[in-house]
Each structure stands twice: as C-alpha cells, then as structure tokens.
Image (cartoon, rainbow, N blue to C red; front, side, top):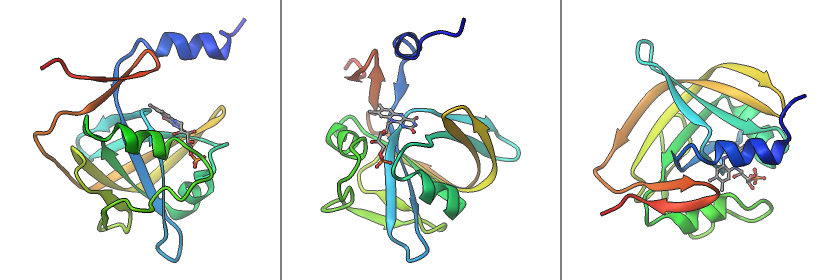
Length: 158
Ligand SMILES: Cc1cc2nc3c(=O)[nH]c(=O)nc-3n(C[C@H](O)[C@H](O)[C@H](O)COP(=O)(O)O)c2cc1C
C-alpha cells in the first residue's frame, strides 16, 4: 500500500532544504516562475542539475514549452519573494527587480546565486515532470540562504 500523500509530505519535510525560485519565459520574453525546493545537482562533467515541476502549476506549460530555465537560490531576506512565487494567479514579477540571463530567464536581484540552464532531458514522474538542465552559467555570493524545514521557513543559526 503506497504511503498517503500528506504523510509523505510530512516525512519529506524533515529533510531540510534551501528555497529557490525557478524562472522561464514565453516566446515574447515574458517571465514566469514558481517557488521550488525539489532541485538537486546531478552531474559535474557534463554540468547537469534537475528540477521537479508540478503538472498542475499554472506555470508548468511555460516550463514545458520553453526548454530553458534558471534557478534563483533565495537569501534569508527573501521569504516574502518565496511566498509570492508560491502563490498562483498573481502577477508575480510586479515590482520585482531582475535581469535576463543568457538563456533569457529572469535572474532575481539580491539572490544568493543563480544557475542558468537549457533543458537536456525531461522525464514523466507521477504528478511532476523532472527537467534535467545543462548548466550554461552560474554564480553565487556569500549571503545567508533561506531554508525550509518541516513546513516552515528557517534561517541558519548565527
Ligand atoms: C518551500 C516550497 C517549495 C516548493 N517546491 C515545489 C517544487 O519543488 N515543485 C513544484 O512544482 N512546486 C513546489 N512548490 C509549490 C509551488 O511554489 C506552488 O504550487 C505555486 O503556487 C505554483 O505557482 P503557479 O501555479 O503560478 O505555477 C513549493 C512551494 C514552497 C513554499
């Protein structure tokens, strides 16, 4: 008997993660994004990472079509941005500072770091799709990250 979904969420919530906003764009260059913690490093040579996107997310079709994405690693000052990009049906980029990456995706101001990717492979995985991205460019600063643990936002101990 498979585990019930809320119980799986509760158990996985014990695995502490960082918090990211992943972004992509449509054919006109309009940015789209959502808050994601299902991201991992996959390979160093060649440089690959993966993200998992819920097929029910409003932004899912844009990720599926564009074949590019960028990961923004949020700082501990960016909890409001995390909450905003985890809310469907709003203009998420209104008043948000960002620049465009080489792939055309939004790189948010004041994030800890970013990873710009083109989609190499995608895999159907239950209610999510796994996108494996080849890293085109990346950077990070020495800034404290935002953390997520047991359903709540946390900060590193000082
Ligand atoms: C900390 C955190 C982590 C999340 N991780 C993921 C994730 O890995 N994949 C995903 O598809 N949604 C994830 N979500 C949920 C989406 O951010 C949320 O469903 C969002 O509303 C989707 O926006 P959209 O409907 O505008 O696309 C996460 C939310 C939070 C708060």
